[in-house]
Image (cartoon, rainbow, N blue to C red; front, side, top):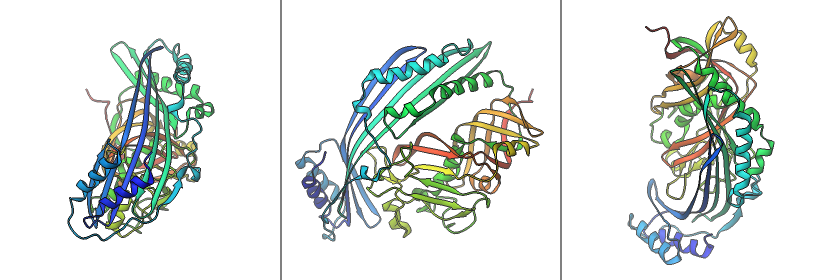
Length: 465
């Protein structure tokens, strides 16, 4: 990794032309993917990412660049070239380093990083899942199982004295099945994983994970099309939290808030949601997919209560945007790799448990949609307007789940949806994925208990001739 002596020289060179902050993000990352198609190993790929990103701040101005040549001579020359973006007298120095091993925080504990795992262990898990599903239903014509692993070693230095080392290890298994019957086809998928090593799967119920994907696929294969209209919508726990993540979470990141490009800019301390809604971003959940010992600026991650009983109490803030907003960093600075400048991003973002139960929510719904599994969507962070697909949906009639429906889409506005939540269950869980924004794609958890949103527009082509 990068030595402290070289780091000091690079940081010092960054400050020669009047900048007040300099930073180095150095990484050595190993990525691996193993792919099985209908019982046969198809591809195995590996990737090695190695280099350093250098950032310089002068007030609210930023210069950023990256290089894979990390020799002392090359890095110092690179820093001076980057510093030429500014002109002025030196105003800052490099403080003595306070060296820390971020793993001491104990938020992410890795015993066997994926870079040290033999391929046979990964294949064994793929074969285990294949064994559960290969004879599930003859209508399932294709099964794709993927094991993905990423081991990231990082060093973070800045002129304020930060000298932090960390080891991250994301691993997940993805499953996609395709079913056909006549001229109809259906695809269902899901993932399971976390910020842990391969032995974490010993504590996961892989059989239930695999069978649930197959069950969903067959249920949706022959389901009638959703009839569009305005309904109460019950969004299930886990990955159902993607709606909050996209429609509201991005609008609470300083990336947009600091530039007044968010529907929630200037709303700190005001009511933006139903009284029964408390929303949290917490990067400290042990070994969870979105957790980190420190963020990508070297700040400790923390539990941030974004909304408390319907009132906006906090944003997610990185160091550069903390300057714009006059507020402290919340440990939410993240980036895909050294090739990206960091900015504020979510970690494990979720709606907290309420006092109802899933059964009570279903029983008190006369006519509505139960969105058991959410899909992808789009959102405008300035207005909060969103459009989301429902991968697995069921009608609720007279307080009971009746039949599956396919092709449902949820259309609305994040701010309005928050205010229209009238029931929150006590079954909070997580679902995980990759989140894209200005600083690239990062691993992010979404979550919630089952919630009910009144008067939501649901799109669908059912009932049309």
